[in-house]
Image (tube, rainbow, N blue to C red):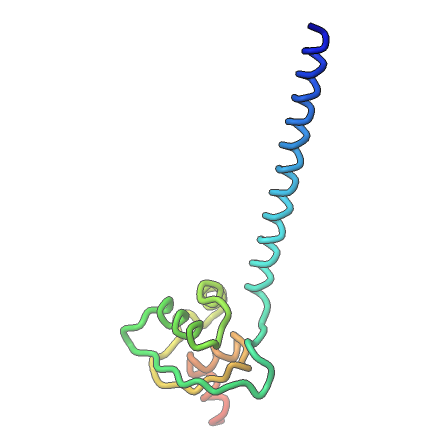
Length: 127
């Protein structure tokens, strides 16, 4: 009877230890994911180094911001359409994206893409 209690105590200890380790690993993975996601939101890294590749992109007036971001991702101009949409939302550019035909480069940063798609870059060049 005493041996059974010792074995049961040992098994419960091992079970608790395993659960504790799994919880710690889960917290670590969650933190790692949160950091990576947060970093990608605030980073302003281009897909390629200069000179990059030029890509022709056409945004139509009936295209949503989500569809435009997915198009940019498919063309290799941004890494993740969802992150780009969040970057647009937290910047001043979400409501400023204009339909039109653009020649964009894979060495452009998300911020540069936002400026061009909103027409801000063209205004700066004209002045």
